[in-house]
Length: 628
Image 1 (cartoon, rainbow, N blue to C red):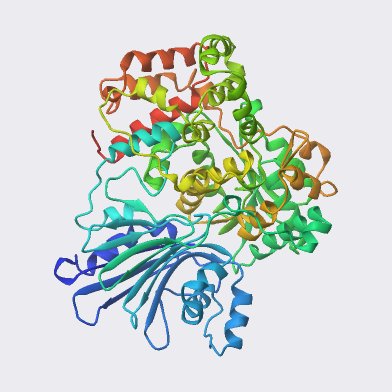
Image 2 (cartoon, one colour):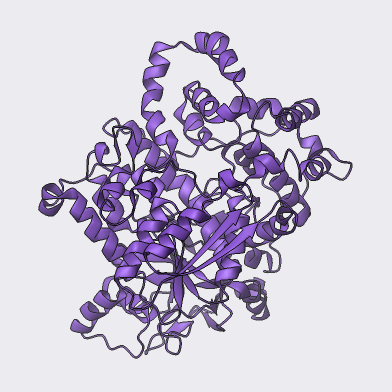
């Protein structure tokens, strides 16, 4: 895990070599173990090329120094991430005559380009973002893994292309300014994150997951090379999958865990007490001669605390277990920090819990395995049960009937029925481009229009995160949205920034694209069966994990901000959103905002997602000195 940065620019406009140091210094937390730089120019002397690197050494600490340059000095590479199948690829390349001088996956990636060119991208099983300069072809290649586990941000203004692992490094390049993208502000209020390729900053975009970009002879292009399996019609399942799907799934998940345990440094696992992280720890224990290091964070509020279940799993598998607690007052300190590390409003309160956990874990390990991605691959959220019923509900209940009869009844329910209210509100949205984000989003498009007091034209819906293919089931369509938008632009971004803020690497066995393809080749009933979600995972773990873990209702990695906003953080929220020094106060309809806060404090409605969204946006504006 590392940080990369660089550019290709006209020589006369180039900001000079010193700019690269400033960019990589901004990424020092991503790579405290070393740094390096590479500079070159095109043969005609018109363009300068720069590649910078900050290293967190996980594999081959001595040999994997970057930028890595080929023996003939024709290829230079900076790479962030891990290639989990690098050993098998290395054997294949050695059989073709390639010579290796290190044991690193970086050298495997460099030689894979020489052997297979762009086809090498489809051979990679891992998480990555990299930049490669091919001097012979005078080509700059940028690429990102299939699910977008590793980030890559771009600033392209015609003459120059600048890239970096985090936006803060782009802002360190002279002439790249922090300017609010107003349409992205609207997107954020709808989704609680900014869907790619956009960001909160005007002129700064993301390279999309499963995509690569090429610069050659002054021409610039971006192209996809893969999409998540749930976005495609799956091929017929292999014989092993047909004969014993649960065993095939178990074997693939076990392989995914084993590959992610390859490291030359101490590592462990984040353990929440849910079935996902418990399964990862159980499988890790199979492949480790020493006790697995496990780490958990809990809360004083019992309804949100899962540490007792984490401790149960830790005891069963004899792990070296560590626990910490988080309190309401931590928000005041941690939220601004999390925003600085994320270069964006923090979409989830969980970011701060993850940041706390990562900092504690970093005292003893440099890498952790997590259960991230299981819900989005295996259908673990309540919305995955309900989304397939949306079309039937809408065919039976006309919109006027819902608005006049159903909606008032739902609104009359106590705040504790917020899940039922979410389902009813989502079913009322007949446009999937509004409904799919709304399951986890802050506001519907109509509610956003009622709250926002600004004349901003909304951005047209980007179809990249949706599919309208008639032969894809409603469940697969929902999962495809999760895998194309919710995951890379929110959850995976959170996991990357909060762990890298503490200079540790996180690896996600459930986010293995071969595992995802295996599950996508099965009927929907292997994900949800008779109301049981993530059915195939629970079946695989039936003789490994205790029944009380397998049968528990999903809690999720939740932070009790709903309670804190009514008590310890009530004045803090009011001052930031409605106080005299608020930067965003005039962005909203004041009466509507006051009503939202009053309803939550009174316990009439649970507006925790929306209030968190607005608070985080306010602090983001202050952090980057932005204005509308």
